[in-house]
Length: 380
Image (cartoon, rainbow, N blue to C red; front, side, top):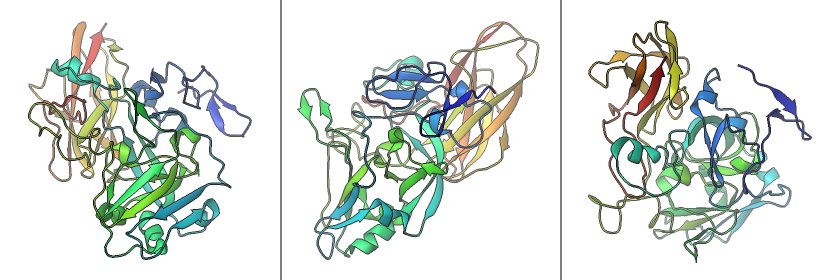
């Protein structure tokens, strides 16, 4: 694969082809690597073919509600406050965070709306929101401090039940209404389990678009929980709510309560081929198909492929690392015999027994698309 790196003024690698980024995104977004949706950038799956397990920083998708802020780490503070602490507010500097015991976790982050476009394309259902196909997901090795460590040092009391992490990006305005800065409640039980305040991504300081100087990483949960540009965390003895847990990031529409279903948490089982959409493949020769599967429930243990619209399934070969909060890479040899339009299906199962369904549960905001995806192929 032609990596075509150059060196930028800060000494970090970047792909040589640079196109002007849309307003709000700092890194270059070449059109052969990303599909741009306003201030959001979706990774093209064919760009991951030949890449290693981790998603390189310059290929990682970007989900911004507003714009990527540039924050001075020397002036940055992370403040914990609220009636769930035994004392008053406690602030930590960047150097404080760097000096604490570090922990690394390999985990995917995925927008809750990943696959939203497929409600219309595959299920003929109308939804609203950013039209992601499948590229709003990436896996990185995150390094930082356990949130549990910070809560202990801040003096969290036994009365605490919920946290409200909040980012430092600008206020988000929807339909003329100012919803304030991005923030979303996090149960104390999850916070104490496996959540990390990360300051590194794939062995380097977080890039601006991915949360510099520090962000939350909430393994296995929808991406909105992993607040970027973390500025403060309210620690509360009472349940907390925000527009990102009431109006947004919950299921609305037919079959769901009038106020919406419960706030979204764990991600379902999903799969994607490392192919263009649609792919063009030559008939009469073997192609080694590649793909990745992941689940918020745990390790993926099985992936099957179908080239006959699901009538029969054959096992894919699972490769290498299988982190419980990451993904598994796989290969499948395929020789198409006839020219024309067809489709490929990939179906995964995780260690809990959960399997990708044939159809995703409909909701008007298009969250949680976890159905087996029909990847279009033109055989030439």
